Image 1 (cartoon, rainbow, N blue to C red):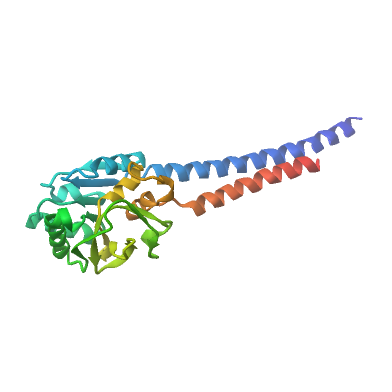
Image 2: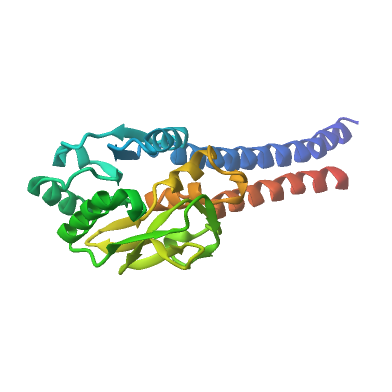
Length: 270
């Protein structure tokens, strides 16, 4: 009788050991998922914003802060120290050409791996700012040129997105009136076929130019009738190189699903 009881206890112990082993594996997977999420949120990436005109400063500031980044508003008298450590620097509608030392600092920043986004506008009202953007482009040794043109007055949505690592996941862009760009690598064209978003690799960094500031409206939906229909936010996150890693999460999720299924199968089998 005692022997039978011992054997029964052993048989009861096996399922418990299996459950304990499976639960440990589930905890391991859940921990890995949590670490991926924490790593994503822990990217203390700084974004510098210089918008003297004030056209989109609030939209940019709020967007990047909501995404978990550090948004810093820098002044027109910025120095090399202000640029140091920032993953992305945005200069929108510069009211003047930066000084020689500032241009040198911008060049070193991009060549060293920084990312610079220059925003201009249509030529009807912003010809001086286009000239200032071109001065910066020239000082950086860029082949991109901002043309004194005026296209697509009023709000528009374009789906002419060229294939590029920085347009991954981008299918449509909200914008308003633009000027146009030549040179560099074209990323987005407007409904009139004008190139108005382009990029160029310089040294270890990247230079982006958007010939419109209203693309930042698409970050908040403030002027977009169908905010969910546009991918402005994804484009700006691509500029940062801070896109999510869905394949990692899918892999971990699949592992967890498999473990749960295994538990259910074994429970049914018993």
